[in-house]
Length: 281
Ligand SMILES: C[C@@](CO)(OP(=O)(O)O)[C@H](O)COP(=O)(O)OP(=O)(O)OC[C@H]1O[C@@H](n2ccc(N)nc2=O)[C@H](O)[C@@H]1O
Ligand SMILES: Nc1ncnc2c1ncn2[C@@H]1O[C@H](COP(=O)(O)OP(=O)(O)O)[C@@H](O)[C@H]1O
Image (cartoon, rainbow, N blue to C red; front, side, top):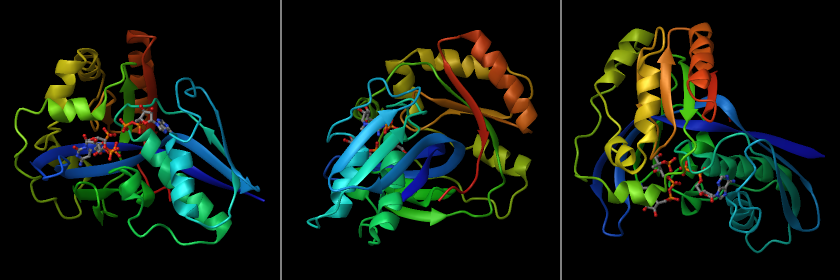
């Protein structure tokens, strides 16, 4: 019997860096959503742990123990004699600020917990990466602390989105190191049960504090944001996470799909996808 789990793209609609801990990790205040574009995990019972990686974005993704999928499986198994054949279909670009590896790890935890009939880790996978606990929820959340404080936000409006990655990998530690200030204001209070346009107006007043250092490291990000700004009906555009993927919001899926076509024509080397936000666990 095989168990499947979807690993959706994570998008930081806003990402405020509000401080830094003694151990170097940064304190965040982030609004995180998930989009119906993602990787797929399939697990089936086996004597040993093994991983195969397929799909259009498999190139360059590690296949050994450093893959977050195998790290998640090893963490969940602990010292029990459990095995699984795991397959990862890689559709999301790696090191792209949309949590591909973290979402794969979270989906693996979900799929293997069901296969092995065991509990999820006590720290919700935080030891695998700061983004894993939020990816385990796979639904809209406010994320604070270094990533371990999660507040689900079930009432956010559904958003129609285009994601564009210009093909430059931006290492997360490099971007955090480039911050001019580590102590920035938190997000404004979230509007209660907002309309879509009311929510996007609020979002427009929030920030991604990692965008300036990421743009300094990878000028291609500015080209993506400029191209997004020129698309028909765009409501908001911003970078996600530590980059380089950027997102743009539109009033309908039709408008988003039309913008995706234009953006792909702008630069045929860019990874471009459109989808809508939702709950995927
Ligand atoms: C920045 C964010 C925002 O959602 O997303 P991505 O750009 O990675 O998608 C995350 O906090 C990334 O989460 P994740 O990629 O799981 O981080 P980890 O593997 O734990 O850490 C990678 C490196 O990022 C830095 N880091 C990460 C999280 C955090 N709160 N403070 C940090 O300073 C540290 O330099 C750390 O060594
Ligand atoms: N399953 C995986 N998918 C993608 N990258 C992975 C995976 N496992 C390990 N990695 C490593 O993790 C790094 C960060 O990848 P990813 O989580 O996609 O980026 P980000 O943290 O920017 O969202 C990559 O450079 C890659 O070498």
